[in-house]
Length: 466
Image 1 (tube, rainbow, N blue to C red):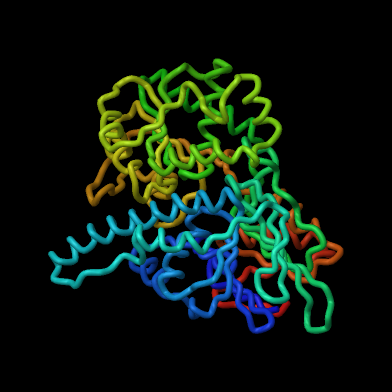
Image 2: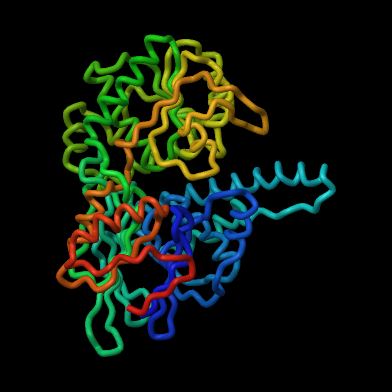
C-alpha cells in the first residue's frame, strides 16, 4: 500500500490523503485549503491527481478543512462512493451547500473589484448546485460497520469525539508478503472531557498511525478551568454593560458553547442574558445535533433527563435565521452574547457584528479556537489595535479574551497517549494537520519513548510505502 500526503501537510487545512492499493485509489478526506486568497483559490482549484481516477473517498468528518473540496472533486470527474457516518452525511449536506453559497458571493464581490481594475472575471471553485450534485454519491456507515471500500481494503469508522459524527478511519489490508496490516487515520481527535459527544477511541493493533498534531505544543488546561475563565469574561463584560461577540465554528464549537451557557444560566453562574446563535449554518447544524442523539455521551443524556429537555432544546438560547433578525441585534443595547460564524472571522455574519462592536470598549471579543495565520481571527487573537473589516480600518477598543481550554482538539498529552496506544505493533507514525512549532514540540515529547518509531512530519507530496 502506498500513502501520499497531499493536504494538511505542515499546515492545518486542506486535509487530503491518497491511498493506492492493488491498482485502486482511495482518498481520505478532501478538504478546502485556507490561507491567502490567491494561493487558496489556485490550490483548491487544481488537484495533484486526476479526480476521475479515484475509486472511492472516505470522509472523517464534515468540517470544511476536511470536506470542503468534495463538490469540486465531483465536478472534475470523481464518480465513486463517499463513505461517512450518518451524522457526517447530514452535516456535509448543509455545510457544502453553505460553502458553495459563500464562494458564489465571494467571487461576485471579487469580480466587481477586478472589473474596476480592468481584469477578467473568475469562476467560483464550485456553486451551491455543484454541492447538491455531489450528495447522491454519499453512503452512510454506522460506527464500527465494516465495508470493503476498494478491492483488498476493508474500512471501518470509530468515534473521534471531535464534532457530531466525527470519526477516525481504520483500514485493514494485506501487504505484498501476505501480512495483515492496519492503517489508522485519526481525522481530528477530540477530548475525553468534552461536552455532548462520546470520548475518542484510541488506536488499536495499528501498524501505521497518521494523526493530527494541531495542539502538539500545548497541554490543554482542564475543561473546568477553561469554563471558569469563560464565565469570568462574560461576567466582567456584563458589569461593563457590554456585549460578548464570539466567532465560532458553526459545527461543534457553537453547540458546545450553547451547552456550556445553558448550564451556566441554569446554575446561576452568569446572569440570564440573551444568548443568540446568529448563523444560519449553525442553526441548521444544531437541528442535526437534536436529530443524531445516538452520538451523545452519558453526561449529556443525564442533563437532558434532569431538565426534561427534548434533545438539546435550551429555553434560553435564541436562534436567528433571517438577515433582518441578524441586523436587529444592532439595536439591542443591553448585555448579550452573540455566537456567529465563521470561526476564524473570515466571512459570514460575524464580520458585521465585529464591525459594529469592535470600537466599543465595553464589549469583549472572545476567541475560543485556533486561528490560522493571515486570518482576521488571528489578528484579533494577537490583539492588533488596527484591523481591516470589509476593506475598512477599525481601531479595536473592545477587550480580546482568548481561551484555549475549550478547544475540541486533543492537547499534547492526549496526542502522546494516542501515539502510544499501538506501540507494540507500530511501524510508522506520520504527523499531519499541524504547524511546524506544534509538530516539533510533539516530536520532542514522543522522542522520550524509544519503543515508538521515529515520527515523520509529512511534507506535501510525500509518499510512504506501508
